[in-house]
Length: 380
Ligand code: MG
Image 1: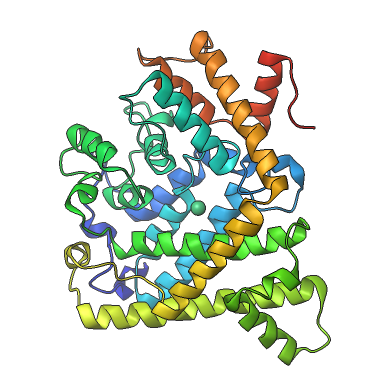
Image 2 (image 1 turned 60 degrees about the vertical axis):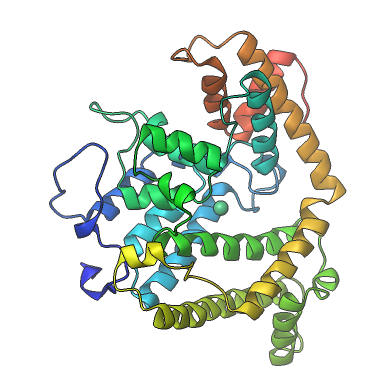
């Protein structure tokens, strides 16, 4: 097992804070490997293949979905983890699970669902996708005779809960004192593996949204040349291969950008670890955030994000799709809330059960249900 190469500041499954329901060790796998395997076998994981990242699932077969995005985050995360001596299995588990709570239709779906839930249940805490990812692995997966959820280790759950509002952190803390909500109240950091997944997520979506944006025809290489971070690698690629154009030029530029971002994280994080000198995971949790880009790369990455926001996420064509997707979610919520489906076990909390039900849907199931319930088809 790779644990022999782990640095003292890495999480090790041998010193995990454990599972909520005690279980005997597996004979051949570490606890984090086991978490990863449980996630891969979960229903929510299989649904990621039919969930939108930016483009709706039916708009094209080659765009990223939540599944391919999660695999790319795992690839980037593992590759960085191995070099830093962090726990690759834990990184893989967190990366593969990080988007399990996403609604259909990407962020548009989440925003609409949050509004619907708060409108009928103002004290519910609303809908947050990170919290929902945790809810999926803690409660909604129904696979074990002894307990709800997948019963994952604390460290995996800590990584899955990337962000959380203070109000929802207090709710978590009330249910699980000293658990994964605590750090949002104490404002401490999660493990390096969790920090890494957060950054790998950002690296992955910036790069693949550039790729999908150009593939969709909504972005052009000429526009991208205005973005300092991308321009640098575009020029590098052209300098090295003057005749390169089209998709190969795009790929070569993205490939160089991804590599440089990974090297930048390795350098900056290596430096931060040397300075802070954490000797344990607890030191990491009490320290400032240690996994990071250099200041220059962080600024350039913000520039690329801003460009994607202004030119892709707010592109009229994307906004049109987003607007219609929100109508689908709102009308589904209204219909189910008025008359909960027979299959839905509400456990007395109808608004939350309806939100769970809708959040679990794939894009195409949501569209089919919407058409069945309203007789209207909002997408072709
Ligand atoms: Mg993500």
